[in-house]
Length: 335
Image (cartoon, rainbow, N blue to C red; front, side):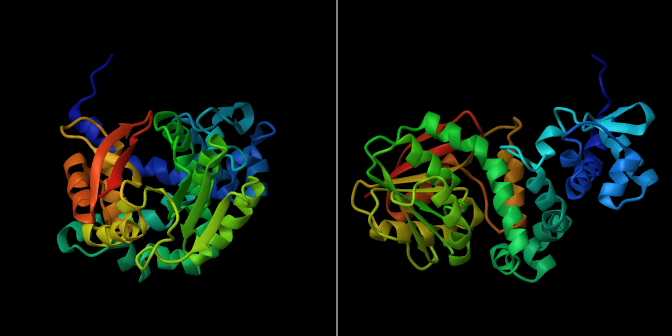
């Protein structure tokens, strides 16, 4: 294997956004959907996407060079295994993720140096308000966000259910449950369990059809509200996936203490998050931590930091259950 000089390796990293933005543009044009039935010429693709054929050709040629689409004779392009997940009609689609990352979040990442220097939230600086307030006012962006989260977390849900035994839980409350994919999968895996999905009013409104489509309306109660104010009582386990990492310690403690106030002694708190390991080994959570810093203003945490957070909120951290993905189930019990 040829050794790549450090300068060349670094150069590839520095220009990494060239590829991510090229993927974003292809997702925006819906190229993968257009190629689903078979290869098309660049002229056919340009007509369908209202783009300029010569420029679209250069765009797709570049993506084909890294395995996303394949160029055939006569400037025809077809799908490849790497391009397939950009289709919008498949389970685990990454199209919405590409759109979300390539638009608003890309602009926020451009302010990384400023955030590290000043502490100002990058997303708020670009858009004038926090991300969740912005999404509440932008239904299409909110839909893309929901779809992107499904694309990210879909693989995690099965891994969580495989790794963690939910037996013995009669009622589980999914705090910040989003589009309902997680609680639906848990309830379908545990037919005797009932659920409560809690989120902001505009989120619950988008989620209700998903719960109905899953046939869980009779077993899953939908409650809207603000977890900084209160959370619903009546569950013996409270689960949050990628919620606490959105917030700093002060706001996270507010959420956890609101859970604590409605829980019985011995009730379970289950946080699903990336737990930052020590050392220099690659771990996606270390870069996800930067995304949390820039977008909502939160952070990923180490095991020790979770112990401290649980203790301050009135919970004992019992164990951390790893999954086959980079997230773990951080189990605590109410004191």
